[in-house]
Image (spheres, rainbow, N blue to C red):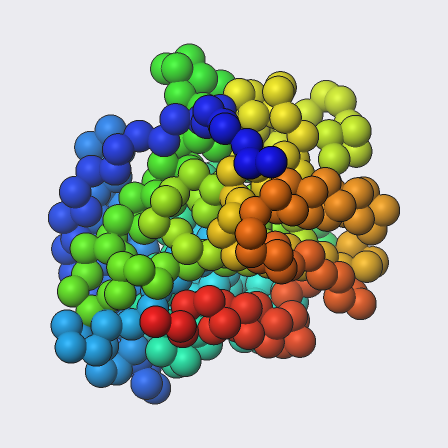
Length: 345
């Protein structure tokens, strides 16, 4: 039986993108562009747009919104998925390289996908990367500005890092005082990034997908569920049950908290709004953040929501033998899913 649903969140109508090109950098098989575009509350956001060689009105390409993780690392955002331009500060480039080596087997996933022919945009969430705080930039400059630090100096920076981490509560509270939910604002901004892709003459508007790892996976299933223009998505290493949460909330949870959803629904209930779109959830069997038993229960519930639709198999729920990681093996699975949906005309 199909479900008649009202949306528990109400995405705003995105503004006209009004994209402005700020800088370009040639790379092998594609171009990295630093662009600025319109978002909500008259804000102009900056990010990387990666464009494959040959993309044009006559050769429109599939496109992807890549959504960065949390990781308690706030000095980089778009640089967690796209290789920083040569003009980026040295501490950003060092931090980015360390992050990608640790979590992505050294692969910049946005660049990898652009080299495969996808147009890619990597929107930054408030408090990350170019939208981080002054104290966060100070931590990054001291941590990565002069190469690898001795362990004692790293230890000396912990109070500053902790202050930046706890600053998430202040972001949530300051926005809430204005009647704004931080995570719902992020959803609207991610939808604005979709509108940037839709405005480009070399993008096939019928073939737009999304991907995210960790917090990016949470952003990804919200975006795919509540943006009609996103055809498919992949969420890697983020799915759980509310009963797994601890009280009170940690500072990190405020960046993903939408009370209208959290109070009425459990996390796997997102499948009510995802269905019947093709979607891939992928989890590690040894992920300490998201225990396998809880994820298995989530998968079962989500499959139940999809079972009422005439396209069985549209929801793919898989485990890989590993931890909270996006390695090359997982990247191959991700690309295979995206290709299976977005390469079809």
